[in-house]
Image (cartoon, rainbow, N blue to C red):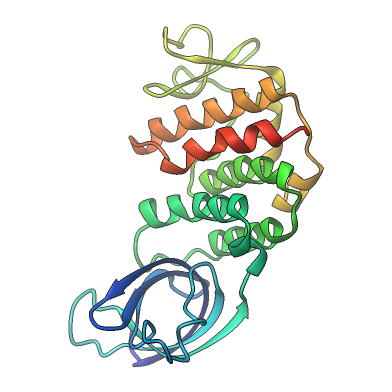
Length: 259
């Protein structure tokens, strides 16, 4: 991305915040205009700062930003900030807060700086709006649906008609594997491959094409839910060679799904 001006307007969600120096913060925001950016909020840690509340994690904001263009990879600086949504319910509820952390984790870890993608921005924002109001027992469905759609938006859309290795038509059982990918046919699976149930395969195919607000209508057996979760873990590990830290919290959400 080539920046020519010194002042920029951008709207985005604050997805990471760290303390910096005496009373400052460095924010990571995923913005509609620039993708993932780093932003310095000078003085925002000071007790009487007007920026303190406005620069909270998970706020949806509109920035006026400044960039001096004097150093490579220099962060933007906040000049003005308007909060469009505080997402208070997310911050006040432990399960929602952890779910929000799961939503932003792959964005922070995997998406490069200043790579604009309006589709990913809209997906994150819609997921936060749903998370703010959805029943707690439905949060797990939102998260797995979000991850399927995020992977699709990043270029990893799954064709459940063809084996990812041999390209043969999938007529029977479908497998996921941390080392060979997804979907796999019976000939390409390994001893460590996970067999997907019909319900799990249908959900993944369906989730790629539906809006995340429909997660509030999803119901499934716990066995199917666990199968989907494990399959997505294997797919994620295959694509990125790492696991999602947030997955360890899914077990608690999984047990509440069908209450």
